Structures are given as C-alpha cells and as structure tokens.
Image (cartoon, helix red, strand yellow):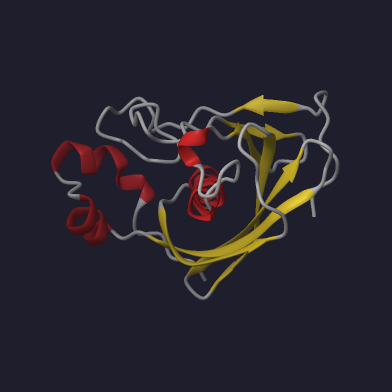
Amino acid sequence: MADMVTPDDAATPVDLPWLDDPRFRCFGCSPHNGIGLALEMFRLADGRLATDITFSDDYASYPGVVHGGIVSVLVDELMGDLIALDRGLLAFSVTLRTKFLRPLRIGTPYRAIARITREGSGAVHAEADVIGLDGTPHVMANSAYQPISSEQAESHMDLVGPDRERLAHYFDHAIG
C-alpha cells in the first residue's frame, strides 16, 4: 500500500516515446484524444511510475463520483505504460482486478502509483494503487499483461509498413 503523498516527493517527469505520433490516440495518455485522460507520468524516487489526476464532471457516474470504468482505465494505463517503459514491450492486459475501497470524487486530486510485481509463464504482473493526497487508499488493482506479437500488432492494431518497423522492438518478447 502506498504511503502518504506529499508535494515534496521526489518525482521525475517521464516522456512516453509514442506521444508524438498523431495516429496514437490512447484514451489514457494521448494528448491527441480530446475526450481522453491525457495522463502525464512521472517516476518516484523508488522507481515506481505515478500520475496525478483530478477528474472533471465529464467522467462522472453518480453526481460527484468518478465512474468505475474510468478508474479502471487509469490503473490499466499506468501499469501498461510502466511495463512498456521498464521492459521495453507493449502488452495487452489479460486480467484486470480492481478493488474499490472508497469512491473517487470529482474535483478531488488523487495520485495513482504502479509497480511491476513479477514475471513468468508468458505474462508480466503489475499492481497499482490510487490514493488521496493524504495517503488514504481508494483503489487497489492488479493485472497480468501478455506481450504483443508482431502478428497481433498487424492484425489488431493495423500496424504495418514504416509504423510497424518503427515500433518493432516493442513486439515478440518472451516472458519466462
């Protein structure tokens, strides 16, 4: 579980290498998606990946409450980006378990923090927490990710030609 978050926590901004591609319209992190979250990532001093977010009414379910599906996007995005950055591979989530301890409120700042927990049997496993700025836990999530193969990149993502070649190093990774 994450500790209390303070403004002086050491944090280093992370540039996601795919954000400059206008074709890339990820709902979680792309600045090219006008309705997306446009998450900005940073590293904490201990190496975990984090993002700070304050949700607007656009992401509400009940009045004043963030929709649980949007919260799941937040943690999935953070864990998936961590795997891409730390392991150099793009992966599909094959399981995502999200435990909602407390509702997230519209207009309230939160921090989401992710870490890789293990690798093996063809998958990378990660966990993420969403906490209030006072350290109160709101969400705990874990997921397993399967590396994307070249064939999947071509068939599921229409990634061919120069685009596929530019990203080829992210595909065809085997996890023990």
